[in-house]
Amino acid sequence: MEIVQQLVTLRARPRGFHLITADIEDGLSAIGHWRAGICQVFIQHTSAALTLNENADPTVRIDFETYFNKAVPENEPDYRHDYEGPDDMPAHIKSSLLGASVTIPIRNGRLALGTWQGIYLCEHRNRGGSRRLIITAWGN
Amino acid sequence: MEIVQQLVTLRARPRGFHLITADIEDGLSAIGHWRAGICQVFIQHTSAALTLNENADPTVRIDFETYFNKAVPENEPDYRHDYEGPDDMPAHIKSSLLGASVTIPIRNGRLALGTWQGIYLCEHRNRGGSRRLIITAWGN
Amino acid sequence: MEIVQQLVTLRARPRGFHLITADIEDGLSAIGHWRAGICQVFIQHTSAALTLNENADPTVRIDFETYFNKAVPENEPDYRHDYEGPDDMPAHIKSSLLGASVTIPIRNGRLALGTWQGIYLCEHRNRGGSRRLIITAWGN
Image 1: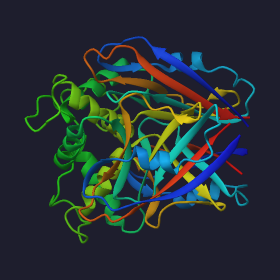
Image 2: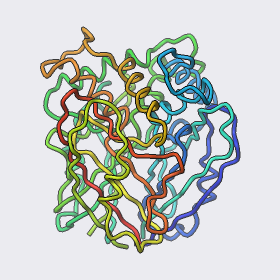
Image 3: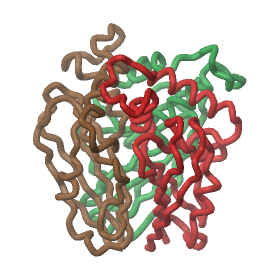
Image 4: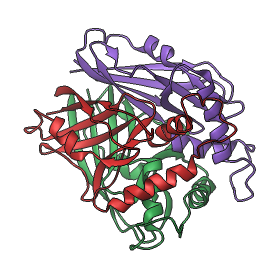
């Protein structure tokens, strides 16, 4: 068993859901000879998240943004944590609903994603800036 | 440290939440002598999910279906991705809310689930068909 | 590659969201010399959950409680599983929305959390009692 770890900084992206599968595959090195393993991608932030979903039709990502904005509305009078702006507390909640990491099997040297699965960066802030990821992979 | 990986195809199940702990335990081989480890179960789809929840009372699984159908309604006029039917976009959203994998400790050769924990297949499509899982376990 | 596993029992906490990063770091032993690894924290219950979120302002945790109580209301006439009290079925649903584990990279002998990331115990029962965790870490 080997384990490798790599830091990746994603360039700033606008609020919304973004396919980043290629960014992760580029960050994966030294796994090409593994028969079986796991790759974990972790985001070091609490106002953005990672998830797996449909990798083909861009309207899916638009519908995700629409859904989460309705499910976790801004400007709720109940929120106490609001001094960073109306997108702040909803960003924290969306991040925990979606999660800070995705964990994907490796099979025959590649991420064993299903045909329609891609990795999404879920950017919940209006100006989230660049985002730091840690990719950790283990296998043999 | 060893790592083992196994493909499991789940037979088609109706829309709803289904206990599949036994299917996963059947798929686990070669871990009986591990003192400590981890088992990850991954679903290669974007309209079904995996989660851990109550393994005894079947009404819990019915209430899950009721809750998620209310929380992520069909036929929202806002959805743009609707050409595969009214259950399509909700299935994608529910899948990301629940997640594509569960990761469970192994202890003394067995899944270290709590007394009341079972593994659910969350089938969000009316006709999802069979579902492909990858089970990866590592430990020693 | 090494793997270590440790049981941790968290003392009973009131319903709500609680920072437990220090409890987990105390439970981590024998990883101080690892260059790279992963730590998984798993909760053996179906009415409490774990998530990563903002570690500084306590109002974030209050807003989480407020949000989840609205998003998963008690006393829904639809729930069939209600004999353990009005907080029972909502606790199960919240637990699956948030998840039973967090998985965090280890880097240079420490949890590689972002500056603002902390580990939350999400206690969804009015009287949840003490909670059993399993910490599993692997790396080298």
